[in-house]
Length: 420
Image (cartoon, rainbow, N blue to C red; front, side, top):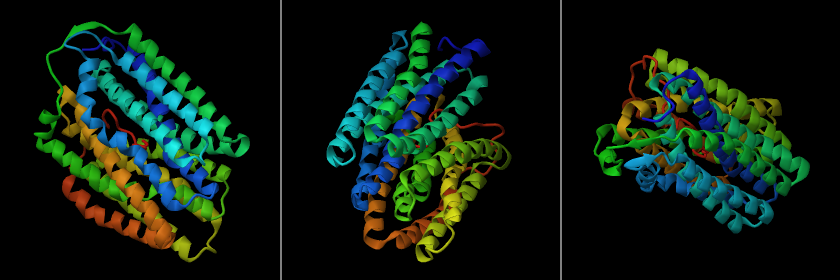
């Protein structure tokens, strides 16, 4: 298959190339699902309007519909790999859409939503190509390095988009912060474009990726159920964390720092720990532990709503620990790797990620409505109860045996993510 399967130096180039794209995608996700909600709430927008940002996840939820077409274009029956073409076009659309959102400003809710939805469509298409390229270009012995680029890149991007971005907004304003992110996206995309162009070989390919062959497989249907259960419990409440902290009296810069610490330090450490624990304990045990930790955090937020005199440093510590979700997502995506057909891993992973995004979208809208009309305390009590109820459900679906060294496969990152 691809040209980059022969030595460690070539593999390092692939890892650097895909790592830049995963960071870039997560910068966009961090701005959309973490940074912008806090900015909007700081500007006084109601929570149900903030919850509408979840609609931007729609392209990520539906990208499975065009994933086979992207893969067929990217890998023609005969000819050169076209990954660079997909990434270049999608990247330019993302950059222009984000720049326009910077001109419009967060107060123009619906025009900004429209811009960011176009950006999400382009970024989700790039993601299909990037995941497929990672599978094609990396030999199996280098998949661990590819996984490190995916997970680490995702949390680094989230720290930038949900953390540094807010610090820049607080210090220099919306437009400067957005345009700084645009410049960063350009820099992050260059390594992939250079590598894809210089390593594209002429090949003949026999397999035709399709959704039908994926959906006929029991393991794919099992993975879709696991994704839905886990995301309802883990991500349904996270969009309200920024607004919750703003209403608790924190300023944008502090929320940005908390998001950055949670995504970069806690999230990255949890991702590394998750890989080791999946190998030792199996995915089921790690998923159960991650859900229990999530439930504890959500119930703490509910308690803080009842007893606002609790120490703010304690709230900051719990809020910054949101990155512990990486522990469970590494386990979940390790399962997805085992449930995917190697002949069309990009299509199968896209299905799993689309389920993640679809459930995130619905939960985000419901979360905004519930928090606005019932208050944070009732909202977080309900979210904590859902996380607890998901524990036996995920235990029934997941595998219990240690992975024997399996690592999370292509696309092993938060949607939106998200975001990823």
